[in-house]
Amino acid sequence: MIYDTQRATATERATYYDFCISTLSAKLDGYEAILGKQKYLAGDEITLADLFHIPYASMLAVAGCDLMTTKGPNVTRWFNELTARASWVAVKDGAKSFSSY
Image (cartoon, rainbow, N blue to C red; front, side, top):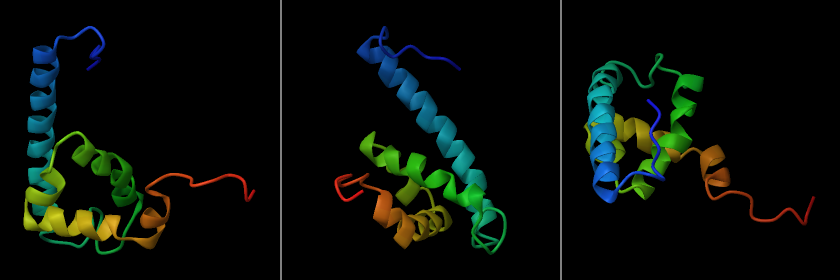
């Protein structure tokens, strides 16, 4: 779906936001079930399927959405484990400076 947020009214943007959050919530129900049976999405070892979610899921909080930490215990555990990884912590705030290169 293509959505032009530049031309949308505040009400239209809010309605679209609610639609997107509702859709995501339904998808996370499936994640909750999967993660109740295994540690990660594709099994008990982390894969790109998990890592792909980190930057996008982390932006949800900026948009005012707390689904990743409130949807269910398995999604919360998974998300917290992913975002606690040293590799994510090192890059999550972007590049500090390029002067040392």
